Length: 184
Image (cartoon, rainbow, N blue to C red; front, side, top):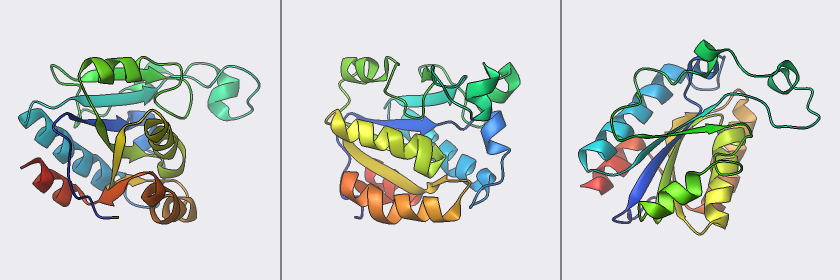
């Protein structure tokens, strides 16, 4: 569904655009995802709207044989947010240990304190961190918009499924350019 409007207090939430993740092979080139996310961040900052930069530093607690879950905390350079995004003064930085940005973090509290009613999502990976955050944002009652040219995945089919089947059920989707235009 095409993005139709942005609430007066909309936040940009950028998922896992960090050095160790943007260096992976993705369905769409990560440099384009970073550039579009940076354009969104610049536009949100120019309007005085919150920019949230989320990064993952460790695996979820409990049994998990994935490399991060089994290997403990990620090395500091791996977890660092890409410099094109910041953080800049006033940005909110959220550190997570699970796929989604809400569980086990203070993201919901910080958004509510800022009066946020809508989130625009960007980042990597579409079917993991972005989709998990979108689902949770929807469940928390936020209006959800996904910048489809500011998300990608390591798996092209998973990316396509999220963009075509899941995201339209959770909110609106559109391009970076269209979302920036809605900011006015």
